[in-house]
Length: 139
Image (cartoon, rainbow, N blue to C red; front, top):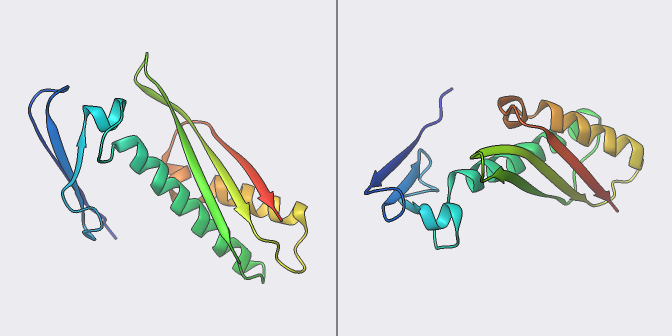
């Protein structure tokens, strides 16, 4: 299986503009620029897309692990916060904050273990070489 995305850029770094498109067309010439990446502006940026991909992948991995353990996920909500060191232009880590509804018959400890396993084993986590932390609210 292969997945593709395309980026186009025109101009210099600070005043230039670009578009990002994905194979599924969910992103279809979505704008990105210096402002959307390092300041505030309308559009997206590569770091935001990494965080979104990680949140989505991790949340699906939690659901799959729950299913393998004989449980059905209810509400799983994950916020991924990517830390970008601007001085060194380096991603230094990602924190996953999972909020989940209680599942009958599944203890807090067991749910935490499932979440930790999903954090370590989701496809995007495996692709990243930065520290990944996790907090879980299970109630």
